[in-house]
Structures are given as C-alpha cells and as structure tokens.
Length: 309
Image 1 (cartoon, rainbow, N blue to C red):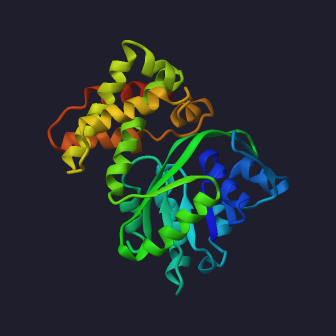
Image 2: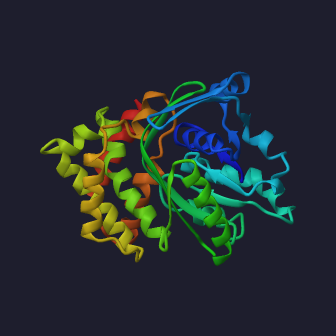
Image 3: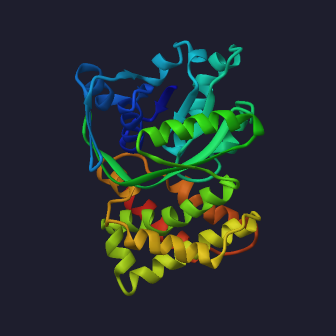
C-alpha cells in the first residue's frame, strides 16, 4: 500500500517505520528539526520489537499537498487534534480535484476529529481510529523511542471503506502491529478518552508518570473521578459506555508500564497541549446537559493556569 503518515512524531513515526520495515510505501509528514533530521539523515525508531534505522521520504505538509495524492491509498493523521482543521484545509483543494481519492484515517487523540474531517471530505473517505497500548516519543530530532504492544482500532463511517480497511488491517498485521476493525468506532474513541482524560492533564499538572497517579491511594480516586465524568459525557451523547468500561480502562492504564502521557511531554517540550480535545469535550458535553464536571474542570483549569505563568 502507498500510505502517508501526517504527523510522524512519536506514535506516527513508530507506525510509519513499522509499515515501511514491512515493505509498505510510506511518506512521513513532519515539521521543524524532526523533519530536517529525517531529510538529511535517517529515521531511527527504537522499540522492543523494532530497531529501525533507514532513509525515509520526509515532507512538510505544504510540500505533501503538492504531491500526486491520487497515488496514495490512505492518509493517516496522527497530528494533534488542534491541527486537524488546518490539515483538512490544506489538503482539500488537491483532493477535491482527484478522480481516485485516498481514504483519510484519523488515529488522533480525542473525539470529534472524524466529524470535523467530514466537513471537508465525503464521509465515504473518512475513517476513525485510535492507537492503544503504545507509548512513543521523539527523544531527539530523527530519533523515536517506543514501548508497548501497539494496537490500532479503526472503523469507517461508510460501507465503502470496508475493502480499504481490510487491506490496511493486513498491512498493519504484516508490520507486527495488532489491528481491529470495530463495529462501533465512536464507543472505542470514547473508551480511549476515558484513559486520556483520566491521566493526561493530571500527570501534566503534577509532572509525574501514569503509574504514580494510578497507584497512589488518594490520587487514584481523582483518576477514577475524571474517568467517570468522561463516561457520563459519553452517555449524554448516547454512546454505550458502562461502569465496566471505566473499570477496564482504569485497570489497563494502571497495569501498563508507567509512562509520561503525551500532555506531560508536550508541557516539558513547550508545545501546545490538547486540553480542549481531551478535557474540554468532557466539560462542554456535560455542561450542555446541565451536569457539572468538577474533577475535569479542576484539573484542567489548574493546568491551564499553570501553563499561563
């Protein structure tokens, strides 16, 4: 398959490297010093099951938009959620002209990326998804370290995406990445948001890894409070999230290797954090239903204040 990874940072760089190592044709879309390092030298990805050190095709998003996008089977977005609309605006003029259009797969954090993409592209082309059980970060430009099993869960918004989904699933499994085609991708996205809202902002606020808050006798209760508010927001939107889902997600992150979640890494590196895509969606969804979100508001507002200092 011919694929592009839009946002070839930690997780994106790992997935792209795994696919390229399995002989898939992959273009890596990045920016800044990380992109410069890939263009000048090679991409290094270190994972227990992958030691990747190869020359790759690295482009900026603007450069990529000038490519022949009809040659691509899929464009996989792994950029921050706050970049989704800009990516869509840049790619739309080129994609609109094509007779053979690539599928657009969002594997980003948060919920709502798919709905936003559907404002720019046909829902027949848009696929929602997430990556779980993997932690990957840029350690230095051109160097990525990853840990975990890696599992891609995805689902189309239209029956027309089924052939592509099957082909992409086979490509991922050929790259030693577990892949599942979900019947209800909205539920899976909210299940991941339970984890993200449960630990991301709290770990960034306290500057600690996930294992510290999930195993602390008192802080773990805050994590559960954050997770329960996420589940309540999902239920407001008629997404079938249960107490069992919350318990499962809590156990998953508690038993996973203690890691720095993406929001903590962003804070450390001075990057914009995904507060709106993770905490904001829970707060606003509950507010519209007349329900308070005290755990999420407290942690989110404190982190926002901290970042403004």
